[in-house]
Length: 232
Image 1 (spheres, rainbow, N blue to C red):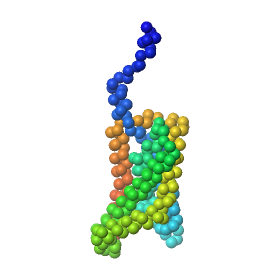
Image 2: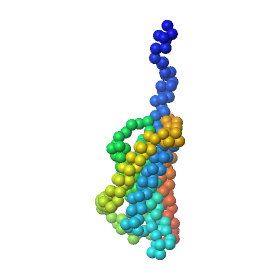
Image 3: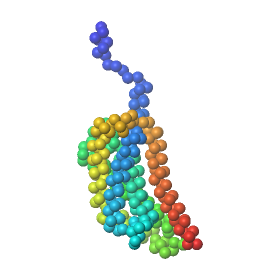
Image 4: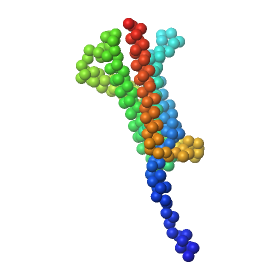
């Protein structure tokens, strides 16, 4: 009789099943780790950009130019961190089995998404420069919408031609690296403990990360306003 009782399957309480379904989002620590990996990977295209085009320092190589460093340095890195936190964090879930090809593909997708986000930021900055007063020297101000969007497409393709190959390579490397690190015992013990959280909590973290990224645009707007105020 005891053997029959022991052979019966143990039923999981309905509340526990519901809780397991709700706790379906990755926790904060693995997301932060994924954001860090993709941010570091994004630094390589940034360094290559300044190596080709310059602009980070003045002619005497002593003083940094704040605006180029902010716009073409900090902004792409923060965009990659945001996309890694929201999209690439699935690679940090060591409980999921994923092939190397899929991991590299997701890394490339995260890198290209961060590039699109950066170009959208560039578009907004250019529009802002065209509508502010005392910016008549900006050629975008007198352009039609069609011409402006055409120029945006040209700049988008231009960036892909010169930097795109490195963006793709860095994204693929970050995806593979994150995949292998997340499956290691060290990562599971230190970073992936209690990794599942309620979806509502994960959504709040994503919103907060997006607001932190938009803080870059606020800084940019303040720089423009300060520049216009000095010209008046």
